[in-house]
Length: 48
Image 1 (cartoon, helix red, strand yellow):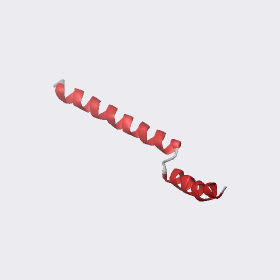
Image 2: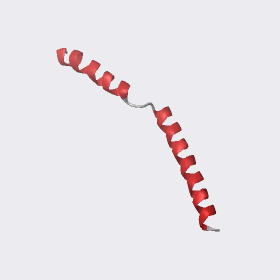
Image 3: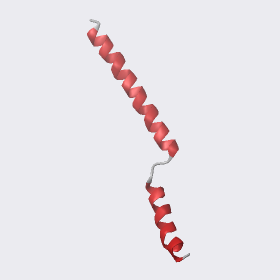
Image 4: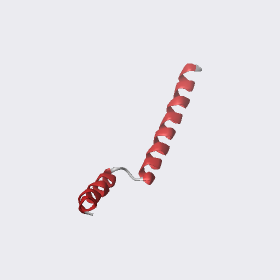
């Protein structure tokens, strides 16, 4: 039981630094929208 008392706070501390699932999904959506805008911009340039 003593090892759980030592290890559990460290495990929870590690997971608190990980980004939440919600933030990861928002960042992915932003990245995808930026990528789509860049692709459309490239198409406009190369089609001239």
